[in-house]
Image (cartoon, rainbow, N blue to C red):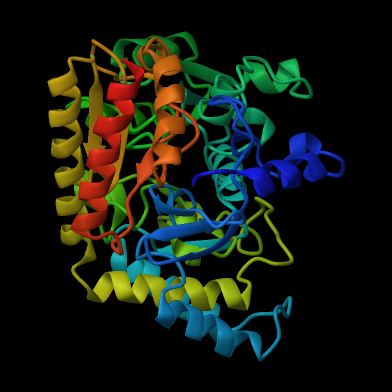
Length: 429
């Protein structure tokens, strides 16, 4: 029988020593309500909580467990590496091998700098863009989340949307003034911002496929137009591929969508589940990073050997396997199955999907930006989430998050998920 007695007890304990009882806000279940599930272990496509419940996992640690949890080759690589110590604070051969592997999978990355998180990667990319162009402002899109650096917390999606935070204390007015925002997929708004801030904008940063207001796809021609604008205005185009990098294709969204960014940020998958990030780009731009140039960036744990070994092992498996085709087929199968369920019961819905990213919105209109994502029936999603949880399906605890499939999922798992969705939605109508 499904119950969360131990999770609730641990959440009460956690709140006595951790702000809100969690170390990342979306984990608190604020959006969907109730106490968060405390995980004990995971294997393949499944999570196991402290109460003994088993779940089919559609978060995959927010992306990096693309081949499933505790993959035997990755586990063995980490175990072997940790015998040599957990950190040196000095260069290793592993860092060279990792850089060369990433370069071999991404055609327009000449140099890459390892960091310790996606936030750090995006923050550093913006700093580099400013240093390279000599301009201070940049454009981001409402609902896109590029980490929690001050300059990104202006109309950021995901966790802020989940907690209904619109303005963030601690972020100064000066920082906010340099952050220009408009709706994702609104090309006219981008052009107006560029015209109103002529020769002041260093870069446009964008999630090429958004994962922080659900999975939101770029309209046809939108990203291509951003590329043209950046070329014409001597601005840099930054793709935040923290979620999409090495998940949507071997070369990430750049390869899948055939658009070249000037700078790319990575995270999630390149660490195989370990804390890691990276940013890279063309030689002429990356040469401005210290110690080659004057744009400073540093990190004691950057290129951590365990993270490098885990990431190298995972990327090697992805490069040499057929996982992307397998993952897309499974995701389309899930999409079609869920679509039949919601059509049958007559509830308005939108399912956005690209590759192994997918999201469900209970909406009667297309979901193409933060405004339309927020206007969906998110209360129904919150109830649906709990009904699915009771049936052993672990979805992101927010309507503003993409689902991430892993290749350990079987078609039996997908069928079980579709069946649970039908039972769950019927129980709510």
